[in-house]
Image (cartoon, rainbow, N blue to C red; front, side):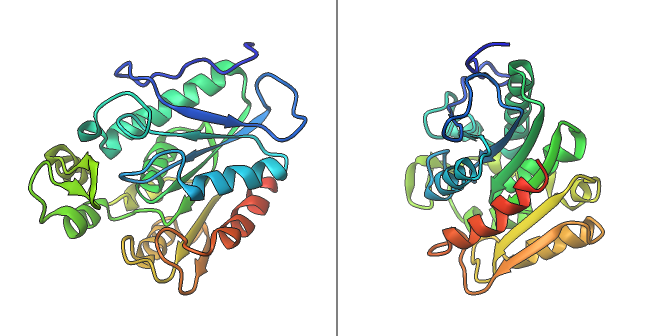
Length: 248
């Protein structure tokens, strides 16, 4: 077993930028369990929500790995190629690397489009022991059409020049449609956390995911809270961290 996690590359050979955070006093080397934390569209591993969750997990004794999918943040690759299906492959490579490192139990927490990526991966990958969706996107094609369908190719998404709207993203979203079929296949513990006032990914997505999964996932709805959980990060942490501690 290596003392340090090795460089992670996706199936295309692109290096993925990750940040491992261990609890204070944790011994070196691979932890017995870890929470992989991933972002949504036009984001990266250093968003405040992801950092707050990683910090809280460390305080609770749980190691974490924040990741930027290829084409985002400091990861290699082009943003124009950063479609959900490719990110499912990125997540597979991350899990591969953690298993090789010696990690035993892997949980995944994804925000927004990262939530959809987690559902698609967990539906087919038994190495994910439990799943957390934070404002998780379910109706992927509907989201892309509503938020970005009016943009010409190359136009910045959400006013971010580094995130140009790509026909590849529209095409991949159309192929996926919704992740409800994948949700129906998930049998591991699953927590849905969603803001009731989310104007990007409607709270209905969480309700539809839970229904598709036969009512098995646990659901926390935060009244008056938006997609980024503005002003509510402690409430998100309070919902997620004890839930994960009880299952890892």
